[in-house]
Amino acid sequence: MNLQPRIQTIAQKWLIGTPITMSIANNKTRELWQNFMPRRKEIKNSLNTDLISMQVYDDALDFKDFTPNTPFQKWAAVEVTDHTNAPKGMQTFTLPGGVSAVFNYKGAASAFAPTFKYIFYEWLPQSGYELDKRPHFEVLGAKYKNEDPESEEEIWVPVKQKSLN
Image (cartoon, rainbow, N blue to C red; front, side, top):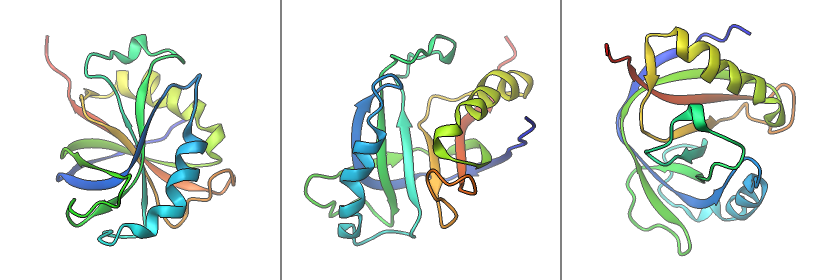
């Protein structure tokens, strides 16, 4: 596998959506999106039609220690022009700006594991970057088709220059 990311700096973004706490072993992604999708049109100030799937990890987490039972918060959300007027039962989130490695993934969502391993265990250690303590997210745009092998999405991994120590 030889996915080469683009390195991109983004400004702070505002999101509105719904979070759920889960782990890989106790995957609640389907439940999260089944609850969010029927309500997404209630968000009146969406910036575009893209969906955001975001993972918020504990700041103390070292991904070398990540296991299938490591809990994290997963969001189903959309980017908005401002985070006022969130529909009842939804929450707002301010995604900090910063540098990200952006990978274009093509394939079924369930076949992502080898790409995950490549990004975190091959590409990242060999790059001049290390993980930054910000949320990870995927942009599910017009070409996203969930389990279709032709589905496309962007994987945004927060990074910063490796420290010299």
